Length: 375
Image (cartoon, rainbow, N blue to C red; front, side, top):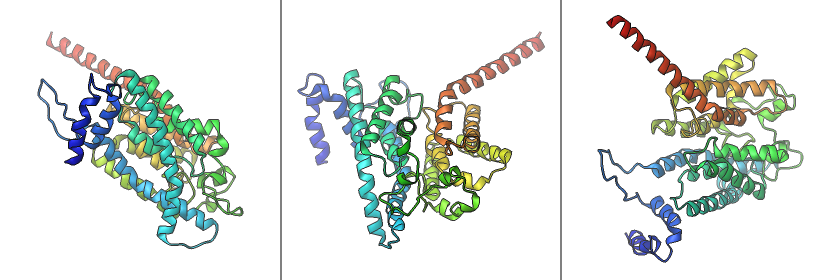
């Protein structure tokens, strides 16, 4: 109650005519983050509860926590493994925490600063969307990405990926993936190679990811075991290695209605179908790279994904198929998930338009047939 009373006491200073009225958007963002907004509709019949946009986004962050916790531990595990050292769990986790905290500080400080500036300029409320985007970005980055590069990527993603389109809910592509794409094409040496996946590794230790092994000509026998890839004790982007953690988060999203089962299932079907066409090992490809993380947390983004039910099936299937096509047919880029999702983000509106147009055409035919029968 003390915090609530203090907020109510200073709130008039941020209202119209108050001493700090120009910072109303910033104040409102912090107030509604802590407490459910007291705004209600003035007309019409509505069902009201405490689940608003901010609470949905918090649920997404909760779903990402298993990936965050395992990824933090895996940073330390890969580091000490490269030196052949055996340390306690907390020592391992603490080392990873010291590495990942700076990434989150840069992600949120840079991203939220831009969000607040645009909100004040437009005299609008601060968009809630970056709460999730800021949490996602470090999880899809290598642990050794320089902080200044991460800051550039975040600024590019927020300004070009969101604000130029009007902010959260208006963006065409996924901002977190756009940040990764910016680094991949601008500074490829910091996004690929053995040296970026393990923090301060021993010189003799390769630290190659499974997809990196394939890129370098390695066969299936040279890949980590399916158990290691499923558990996540392999090099890779911070939040993408543990499939157990990803499944836990994905189930949370699906149960709460924040991820579309149609997109998830169709993405797997598309990847499996194309893997059968190319006769490549299906299980390994489903467990390698960012496929599962992208499926549950990126492809299902309700803003950039297809909106119609048939469109979701098409959208997800094409994402899975294009991933396998890139991995098999393009020897210079073994991942594919990032590019396939960004590509389908662009085509999602077209898919929905085609679905709606076909539905309208079918209805017109039914109406015409019904009129002919009535005559």
